[in-house]
Length: 336
Image (cartoon, rainbow, N blue to C red; front, side):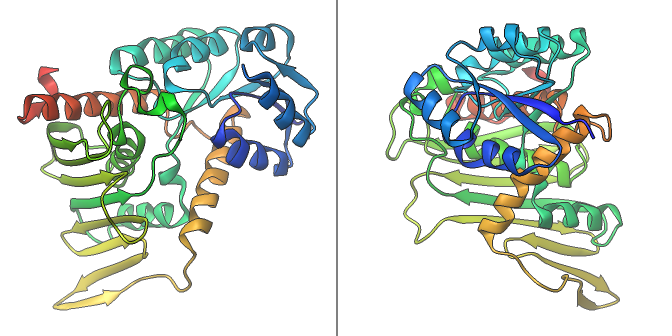
């Protein structure tokens, strides 16, 4: 079987710790080129993973390399320019979340994919957790009835220590666009994508100045389902916390720990599958499953999940969250 030729643009933490190790392990992939503006990092990482084609200018990579697909893992402010260039070079692309800093900045990226008839996937890895995939299957099989309410949260350190990460003009925002967007995507995916109607958000700057480090949101959907979501880089908790509880008309389920209960007559029956995985194992598998899904889409074996169009709709909700926090009022999506 002919291997898919993949390039990685941006060799920061996510590329070093996740994308390159997973690509190297994949049987049907050849990592043929990398690009990184920091020359020392470029050579160090390329040497480590034995990659011969290396560029300090991603445009040169696109001109000279014959790759089939590209992973964009650069700072958010560069996503628009780089991703559109990749699409115009007729390459499929997996771009790390968020797709862009704003909804308006994300729109031309999706339009470029459509115009050039290329595939674009956005790195919403939480939905690729094995427990999340099982849970969605159980929900679709009506095991908990109609889902009505999702309560979720994530307390952990910020995803990057790069200086750009806490500069709003470069990152697009703080914990909302870092962790909140992933919680939002996972919740709406489990609810089967109901259109969001209104958003109410409170944000805090406990240890940061330019971007929020803590947020709490209440999201109403058009089908009457509700999402309550909290995220923080800095609340004083004993350890990292990630949780999601979903309540339906016939039962309830949770992630971390994975549990599912179904009401049969007046009894709650435990339908939780046997065996459990550690949080670290689930996280690692989420990225591996994400990569497999992207490569499958490149080869035409499966559709693109977590598509550019879906990411664009998430950006509109994120924008409403920021507007709500700034204006201290509930925001209707249709008014944006």
